[in-house]
Image (cartoon, rainbow, N blue to C red; front, side, top):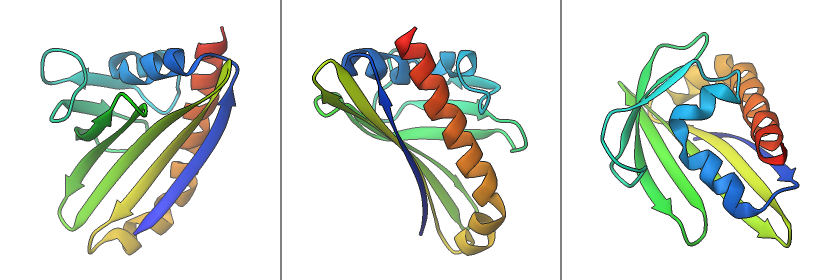
Length: 140
């Protein structure tokens, strides 16, 4: 398994950052790493929810929420392909009047070694876009 991770401090309440993260269809408004996110199931984001995600330089993929814990403000969604699974992890931690957000991508499966290395730069770039965009959105 290969993991890419970034953590960002945000001068906003954890609940605000959590609400922005859960509103996945609006991510393209604040991060250049997303062109379009479309929820495929009705209602709020929950375990089992699926979303079609379009990102620059990558084929469109369907991601499914596999874990969501509002009490600790974290969710994970995964996308699968032949010999490959990619998980996106999101966690918001409260620190008084501000918060810390950790975003990570984990690539696993038989083809993970072949995919992770060439996508290393893109993964790090996109995590950077997401961290910076989330901070700007929450602090505005």
